[in-house]
Structures are given as C-alpha cells and as structure tokens.
Length: 214
Ligand SMILES: [Zn+2]
Image (cartoon, rainbow, N blue to C red; front, side, top):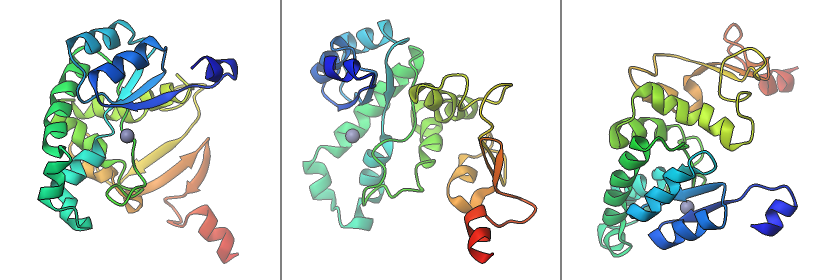
C-alpha cells in the first residue's frame, strides 16, 4: 500500500474472509471486492471508512456459477465442493447490510472469465435489484456515479450535469422498469463518448464500422 501511494496509485483487492477485509481496511485500501464473509466488526470498519473505501460484490461470478455452471461444465458436485452455495448466501446477506449502511458499492468485477464473458457485465445491475434490495434507480447509480467515483472522476463520470463528460447511452426501453434492456451491445441505440457520437441512432452504424466502410 505504501509503495502504491508513493507512486500515486489506487489499490483494489479481492477479499472474502472477514479477517482479510479487516486487514485491507487497516492497510488503507481504496476498493475491496467480494467481502462475502465480512462479520459485524468488518462491516463496522467498512461503515466507519465509507468515505474512503468502495466495495463491490463482483456477484456475476458466484451468480453464474450457481445458476449457469452447467453451461461451462461446472457440475453441482464441484460447485458444492467449492462452497459456492455458501458464498452466494453470505454475499446476499452482506450486501443487504452494505446497502443499509450506505456503503458505496460498484457493479461488475471478475468479468472476462469463461463463466462471466465480457458484455454480460450489465446483468449485475438487475442482480442488485433482485438479490440485494436496491431500487432500480439506486442500482443504476452504483453502475454509473459510484463507478466514476471509483475511477477517481467523481462528478465528471457517471453523472449528467454541466461540466461532466458527456458519456451517454440511449437504450431501447426503460431501465427503471426492467434492467435487461441494459444488457448487450444491441440494446444501445445511441452511444456518446465525451460528447462525440460513437453510435448514431440516425445512422445505426458505429464509427469504426463506418470508417472501415469508407
Ligand atoms: Zn475476485
């Protein structure tokens, strides 16, 4: 941690055990993924440091392993042997607490694996509503404003306001009514990056495709 801070870097870790969460908080970590087995003391430490520490369940991996493991040959026996059902239950309990205690919680994490291919990341937004008790609007904030905060761009990324970067998505539906409209590249009618159109709804062609065609 000292070396990272000497170089002006932020540090994230993946901790599941209560003791590993406490050690990370004591060391002055910026972001902790999982925290499945955080006990009362660990949750209290996180709450006391909530202006400094951001957490994320990285729930996709456990969710997909429990519900969709057979798609990649992960049998129930193997999953049970890895303690997946236990992790799943603890994670749900822990993140209801994180929400109740007003922690800043990010979506995503641990994507890009066989069980959690890139492009599925936005499923986490619906998981926050279904499993952790967030309202759809709160879950969207976790995916936008809290994410921008974690990247060190609070007030500039993940918010729609003057002076913020205009990174905007227009999706084909109302994400407050159902979060599946946010999942997959085909659902984005418009993609604007820093104020410049990447996918223009009028042309329905993305910029790289258009450049290649030209
Ligand atoms: Zn992890």
